[in-house]
Image (cartoon, rainbow, N blue to C red; front, side):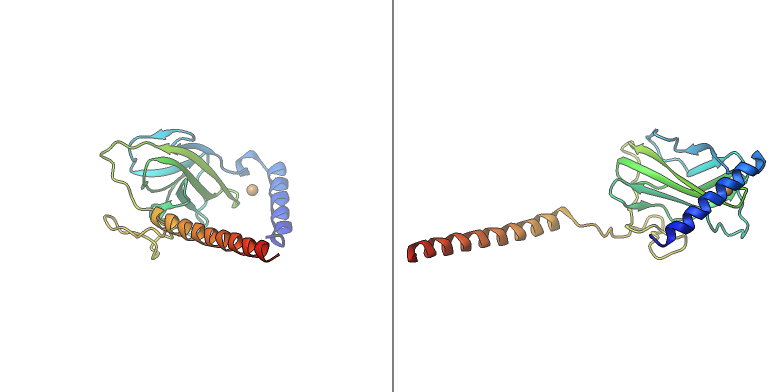
Length: 194
Ligand SMILES: [Cu+2]
């Protein structure tokens, strides 16, 4: 990370210089619209999550390289299949969410000037009872990758269950208690002997 910092700094400075010396049309794309809207509360799942910028997106390779939308809940679980579509100025992905709560939509896209820009949009999910919750995965899904759950199919979430937490907590507590009892017994014996 530290070794990458100078390169990142150079890139930022280069970008700033380019921005300062070039026409406004070559500046970075900025968001003009998104689904969900920043800070909003969703009560029903839209068909797609998307961000729309002021200028067309630059999908040079035609395969969406450099473009991504990731939807993450408060526990760091990812939702959706990781696939994106690029249409003019809009980057979109199929919408999926899990249980009610706070989420973030992370987006990354390639600006018209060829530079990558990214950001995140926080929102709240407060679904009606009729909404079907998707199962999250603990690593960012890649489109067509193995971590991806087919519709109607669920991927077992690799989260530590409450039972595990209680069991581990209980075991730790038992060890501490055993150590404390041993210490007390030994110190009492020492006192008697001394
Ligand atoms: Cu730039």
